[in-house]
Image: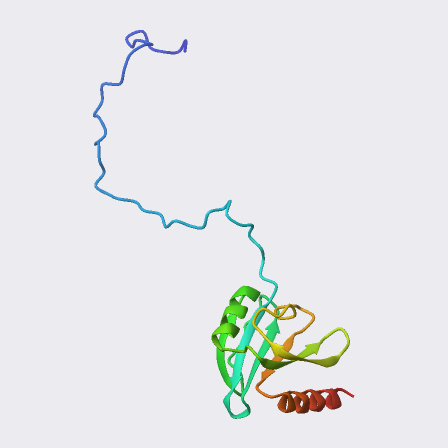
Amino acid sequence: MTDIPDDLTDVGTHHGNEPPPETGQTVRSPEGPDPSASEARPSAALFQLVRFPSEHRLTVHAHSARAEVSPPDEGEEVGKYRTDTALREALADENIDGMVAVFEDAETDRMLMEADVTADHAWIGQPRYPTISFFESADEAESFANTRDEGRE
């Protein structure tokens, strides 16, 4: 501080105008999730739930997480879900307890039937099963599975 002019002191306080105590503006920020509550995970898939009222069937289609999915050509879209938890909640709302499920197994290229399924079934939301259809009766499910298996051969 050797370049201070001779007529200014090198010690002292500012004698200018004091800033106003309040600006008159309130700034609010929305409160986000607690970062320590749970680990952030990228979405594994986008699940589309479709209802086919005439066939008494619900179908889950799993798409890439970044896919832009349009409404289905057939059936009524119930919703789109980014997590398997949200999908399970939607399936519980649709009351699938006790229904028969047909799982399309991408690894074996076969259709697998499971009776008496609930929304907590371990295969729901797994990438191995890109399409899952739920039926009220075992006969409808078996007919659907056989038709799909024959179409693959």
